[in-house]
Length: 595
Image (tube, rainbow, N blue to C red; front, side):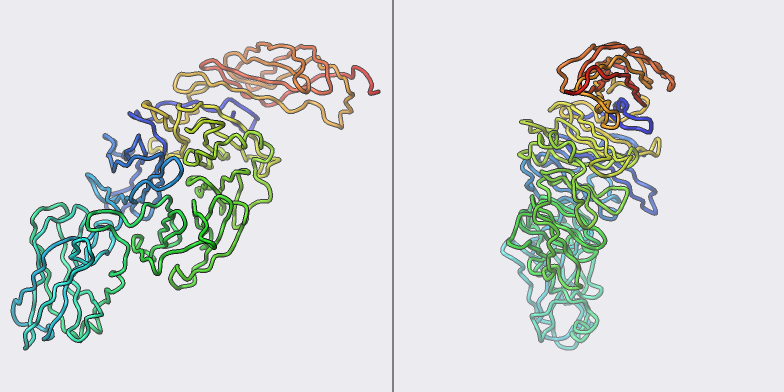
């Protein structure tokens, strides 16, 4: 059900948005603006074991970004790029982090933390210059096309191997060169060297950088070196920090397989199992073990993270800690305990895309709003029986989406013994975000029928919609207000049951007679209406009501129910049938007096 301005109503149906050949368990709406190529609107989705991207403005066939088997993809936006990692059914990282660049055409996906190159360096004297006489050490640093200024080269797999050469007296100019197959993700080579009097300090050679054509075989790279030791010590940028960066190995193996990612101010955070790495500011792949690693007290497990008001929160299954920058390296940050009992077990159990300065956190005990502290009670408190059906043995199936437009938060999960998404627990917060004001609907899609839920911006209407990824080959479905009463042609089983008709102020006795009801209801087709007594030991019906789209339609029901109290259940389950229930008036009288 949905809960609109009038009251409970059949939720909007779905129509086909994009046909796919496998299940889709992750969807991300990537909106960005690039000055010289215009706005971009792309749908990024994890289909089967492949992350794909479709341009929603230009159209055309989807682009396959990379293939990596897993249960779901974690996708985060950082500037003009997205970072993605894949997790297995237990929520552990399945492979290397990938980077997708909005400005690149063709195959714009690369592995993060570019690998070093193994080449044979040559140092050639090319004439008069200002290089200081004496023995120097040389190498180069590779920069990726995603902007990562990374590893020292050459590296054959056992670490950086420099080239040592002697500069003749009188001031000379040099060329540092090699011929090699240029990696597809490489963009620049930057020459580095030491002074003749100090081999321990490496510096970037001013003017010693050259662009390289990524993916080109047998390319000659020649970097000019014409700088004195005095200039190396005064104007050149020191490069020693790059000696200790975490990068891919020479064989292409990643430094780690993150289970989660999030943007932490001007840093990128990578979550492993028991630690997180925070990158250097504005350098989102610059990570070093000694300065970037953060651990929770006792090296507790970390599942997810997010940032609010410059505080970075790390969450485990039953704990939450906050970190605040101190203008020093992340490794020096001190954790502040926020909760020793609340956190999340699901990598996607946090929703930061909300209408305010708060996030939603999915915990085993309920759905909490968090704004620097957890609310006292989860908004799912009144629906605890349904919440306890979530199978926490399938944490990667759990994810949460805030549908800001319709003011509801949707938790997708596998219930009972299911391991794939089977239900949506939907909390409408139009009347408030407390457990006593939210409206609840348990939407049963059945395991295997759908894979995920997401908010997607549609450029054709310039609106945002809830979309549903299929659980097998089929279609990504778009929630569609014009598809009233049907999911792409199939019936929507809409079921709503009122609360108890009588309150204490009505002065009910132990036995009361309920004889009729007026329904303020509109819709199409027919609705089945069933009155029950309290405890549902007695019913009279079901009765069939013909629906009209007239909002002032008020059909009357006659029935005979005896009991302490009564409820009314309304449902439709045929394609194109729907109802919008604005009110119920129940008629009753006392049957006997209390003894």
